[in-house]
Length: 113
Length: 112
Image 1 (tube, rainbow over the protein chains, first blue to last red):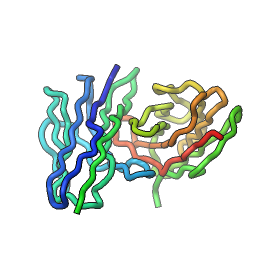
Image 2 (cartoon, each protein chain N blue to C red):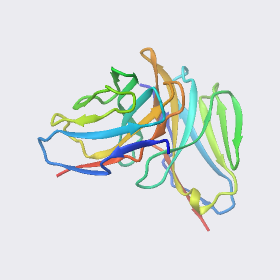
Image 3 (cartoon, rainbow over the protein chains, first blue to last red):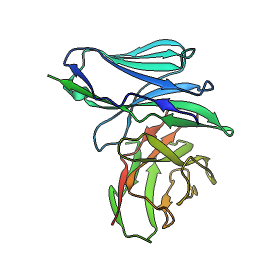
């Protein structure tokens, strides 16, 4: 069974701090990795994707990938109360000639003033 | 504006009824997907389609059916065979199956 694991949280951080969200995956054939943000009652919104080992930065967000350790993380710098949401990690895997996303259950982030 | 639309936003179904959820995109994406989300759980793939007139079962296809007669449209029917259909249903699309997916606003289905 291909799995994506995330700590459900809540992860509570003070405003202005760095929030670190982590994700592990089981399928070594995984090709690409995605982070989605989901506000309560809303649909997921793509924040970042990463394909290669190392770091990828976009504004206050940094995605980190370590394929050897099967680990992907998302760092949010200068956290704001508006960042409070559930963050979903998704991993793209080959499946029967196609590619599909496997989602983790998400980590709930709470940024307090 | 380009995007993905889903309708209705809320849907109530009586036991034994079939219902159809609409998903339309004007992004010219080839691939479309249906997911189901239950509280505290990740998204689970129901069906996906890479091209018109072709679709594949996902991980939880039992009790659901789809069609892909047009590139822009990928409706999902929840049949009476689906024993626990109450959930948040999300449609997504991507340029190709190896690209990032974008989601519609979702349909919340409740069985009365």
